[in-house]
Image (tube, rainbow, N blue to C red; front, top):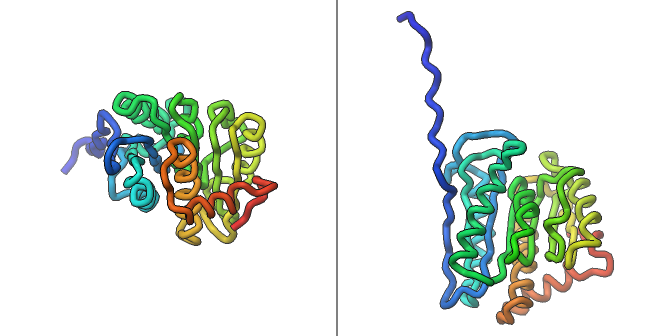
Amino acid sequence: MGGTPRRPARAVVPADPVLTVRAPRGEVTAVALVLHGGRAHSFDPVRSRHLSPSRMIPFASILHRRGGPLGLAVMALRNRVRGWNGPEMSALQDARWALERIRQQHPGVPIYLVGHSMGGLTAICAADDPQVRAVAALAPWLESNTPVDPVKDRHLLIVHGDTDRWTSPRQSRRFAERALPLAASVNYVSVRNAGHFMFRKVGSWHGLTASFILSRFAADTGAGVEPAHLRLARTLLTADEPLAIRV
């Protein structure tokens, strides 16, 4: 019964992330890349059963349902590991990997990034990819030193619940203010009585995100997006004071 206790075996980290593709009907005219959240520090592999990637499935589904018939491909990235991991920026490395593959397969088409929490930070940092046109950052993990240069000339939507205790609505608002002189457009939406995981007011999270991405898709490609989505985008995302929107 004696002897040195064994250390638990470390889970094997995949060599590459996993990219799930929802193909459009006909030719690909644009791509939406969906990025999930995670942890500040963790080299544990991401599993499909984890909440962070699972929570983004409805966003991918609604974008594909509304945009797929018009040429919008929707791709959901599952990261190799769960953490950002400081200067290693694991999630950003994985997003760059996915963007490179999208550029190879669909050169020149517009790319739209949708990310939650750590995925929101990832989306903002990856926005400097030359094919990215717009970013929807949902309850993003932002800090005072998060670089704003990547969103230059991009359309930016930030949505944050006002009761979020995991990431900071105040930092999101401040980032939006810093982005105003650089980005093509900036909208900050505060969701009343909503927390970090987007379980409250689900329709607002889904509707805002889909309307924003589909409106940019229509503007970039001339796609005949349903008028309801364009009306919602115009109502909520083109206010006289874009940083004061609350739903």
